[in-house]
Length: 253
Length: 160
Image (cartoon, rainbow over all chains, first blue to last red):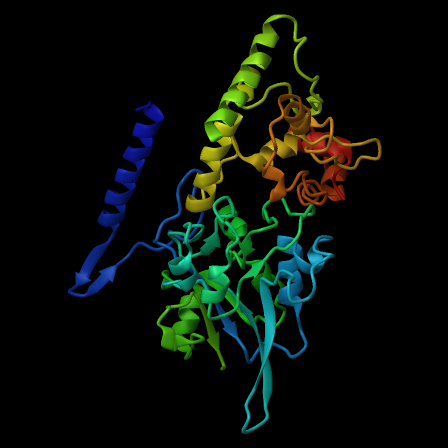
């Protein structure tokens, strides 16, 4: 075992013990956790389940006809209008990481829209069905496709209750350096994982929303804006009946 | 089949390595952009032999653990090894005669990376680092002309 390896184990061990030391019990059942772990993970440190990244989307604030979040996602992740690729695919075949959905109350006829994307479930059906292990959930709750392993069988697309995934039907040439995409693999919203790892603390859609309808944050950090908002207001999971514990929550539906 | 392929790769690589002993006569002449420095992250003979070992390891670390150190990141390889044409536009690293492709053509090893990965830095990737205002400020205050990455970018006019 090299010295570097030993250092790594040592660091992990020390990290765990100091985290345990920082967790003090005030009273039975009331724990004082050290906060601020959400910030600035060193580049060489693996993600951990101390964080759970998620989004809170307020569909009341989401303005009808606005698609800023979709456009921002397209240009950040180089799909759709953000790329010169996928000219041969038809509309049903093209990539779709995020879309706007219009809901209508049949009784009052009131219509409103909301953005819909991968819900980053705690118990993702796409991961359950994946025959190769390409579909996986990262320790910090982000559901991704490892395209090195994906064989393009599309079971995950069928399993997803949110129709969040799409398949690439043709060769691509115009990818973003941070977002590899290629023919024969399935893809979906990555929660801008490259931005999170960089420490941006936001996603392209949340940055772009001028109505402040999308909040990004750490669901595990009680002091984060998203956790505070979810404490104050009633929020819903789409298809909560499936018990998937989604990382993307909604208000106003 | 895979073993056979690996055998071919190692044979081809040893051919290149032994080639270095007699006056670099074997193998293609690589287009290397010296403006980014003269040294790779490891000595060249190690990189010729082991670049995929490092890239594969890094790939799993990045994909599953979110570790994004730069040393063996494919993106950083491309940032350094992508050349520009006369008009200043990046040429894909898998274009004929370019850094990755020339050696892979010579050894008849298919390049799979670029079915998914970008083959050149994004043209806008540099713009937030050095703005015109920062450049003007540096000139006005007679900033030391040391060789830094920022200085290089400013000199090349990559900033918009």
